[in-house]
Length: 390
Image 1 (spheres, helix red, strand yellow):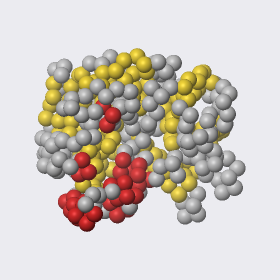
Image 2: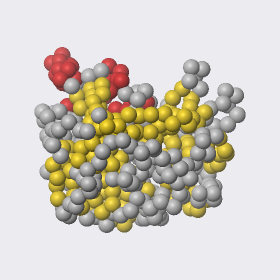
Image 3: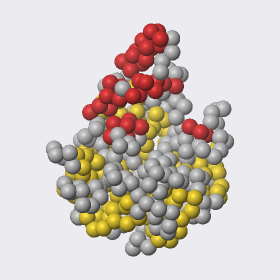
C-alpha cells in the first residue's frame, strides 16, 4: 500500500476534503451559541473548559465494494465526492492509473483514465491524488507531477505539468475556480502559502514565516468554499496551538488560540505536539486533529538516547504499533462563528485505526474509511462525524 492506515491516522487522520451535498450528515444535536463578529486580525483565546458535546463517528450504510473475481477496479484508497453524491476513487491495487465512479448509494458505475501520455490518460508511476473544485471538475495529480482535469461528465479538459500546484491532500486544496492553494513549503522559505493558477503558473505567495523558522515545515490547510481558508500551525512546536483564517487574496482574517494544559512542549522537536490535520465545514465548524506524546513516549525516547547516544527516530517510526501505544490523538471541534469549543475527545493512537475516517469530504462531516472484509476484499465505508450533546 502507498499509505498504511496507521500512518494515515498518525500523520494526518484525515485525507482530502471534498464537496458533499448528496450525502449530508443528519442535523447535529449539539447546541451552538449565537454567531458573533470578530475584528480583522483578532486572535481569540478559547479556554480549556468542559465542552458541551462529544464526537461520534457513525456508519451510513453506504459501501463501495470490491468483487472477488477482480473484474473491475477495487474502490481504492483515495476517495472524493461531488455535489451530486457520486464517489470518485483511485489507487486500487493493480489499477494505478484508473479512476472509478460510484453512485450516491455506493454502486459501481464505470471507470476512466488509463496509463499513458495522451489526453485523459495518467501516469502509472506512483499514486493518483484526487480533488474536486467548486464546479465539480475533477483534478487528478499523478506520480509524474501532471495535473489532469475532467468535467463532471468525465470529459478531458487539460493537462499541465507543475510542481508548484502541490498535490499532497493535507497541504493542498483546489479552490472554487480551479486554482490550487498549497502550504507544503516547497517553493518559499519566507512564506507558508502559495496560489497557483489553473495553468500551473505561480500567482502569489503570502503568510510570512516568523521566529526564524522555515516555511519548509508546511502547515495543514482546509477550504470549504468562498474566498477564505483555514490553516493549522507550523510543525516546529509551541506551548499552544492556533488555527487561522486567511483570505485567498493573502490577508490575515482572524485566529483562535488554544492555550491548554495538555498541549505542552519541552523544546525537543521529537516531543513536540502538533496539529496534523484541520477540516472546515460550510457551516463554520472546524475540526482539528492534534497528535501528542505521553510521558511514557518521552521516557522511551530519553532511554534510547542514553543507550545509543542518539536516537534514530526513523527506526522508531517504523515500529508503528509500539509507538502508537505511547501517543494520543486529541480531536476537537471549534465553532468558528461563535468562537466556542464544542467537543474535545482524547484517544490512544493505537485505538483509532477502526474509528477515525481516512478522509472527510469538502465542506461536510461526511467521510470514509478504507477496510477489508473477513475474506480480504477491500471496501470503502461511508461514515459521518456527528456532535451529540453530553
